[in-house]
Image (cartoon, rainbow over all chains, first blue to last red; front, side):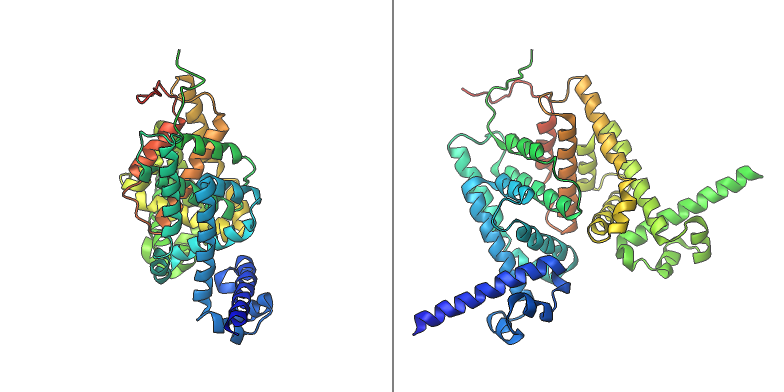
Length: 197
Length: 197
């Protein structure tokens, strides 16, 4: 019954990903020992590494999954919405996103080998952002005096700042209006309410 | 001759700060061992710790000095100019700023005690940015439909993103136009060149 078997494999994989996500978020990459991964997933190391070659592959699978989820939100609602969800904790897995994202940022800084492996996977969010902006431009919502690539880089830079800000434990309750400003600055401007006299 | 003696002390202090700045930037906080600090400054540990109580105090003195220097640039030219200098390497100590700033960011993330000590010192840049924006508003260069505190937080968030971006070794040669956009988004808008039809 290959069908059932595949369902079973998928469920196991899911169980490993969900458990280890919490584990990485809590202890960081280095701190997520195999023993802790076993506890968090409720599975033996044999079962875990039957599905993932090693810890790095497991982490990359998680990070990739998060990037895909973020890309979905971007496609539907834009990158600023991703940032709002990071802020508000309203999304399905807000703290998890942040945890994984932080770990990616940290390892990019400190681990050149990881940087190379991640580079292949990190294009998703950029592409989703760029495509969303192109669609917004088509329907006339996007400012048309700045290149879409510049707007994409701009939004990604703000996202990175936000992740870093949250990571440093700085107060974030005043950042809603900042994100409004970010959103407005990529929008097509109707004639301003406060026109020059 | 207290005058000469003070000059001598000041020069020593300068020598220690300059040498250890390079050392911290190169090896990070943990990697900057006392032996390496001796090499980098050309002074014995006795001389170094005659001027600074311990390594942490030395690092905080550096970080504080950088924040003051950044605050000076902010006062004269604004926070976006600080970011441009980080990008271009045009400032007097560009790589050093970045090195110290990165180390501050990293330790804020990982070291709650450092976070507390730094909190007292980190207001300089915020205050300088805020005051600069208030002056710009007075002379009519700043948009007046967004609170100055929001604009300050916005610029600081972008700065944090830029520091993080550079720290991750991501390509930065396309960020000039992004900073133009950031600068423009806090400015008072004259009627746009591309008005709605």
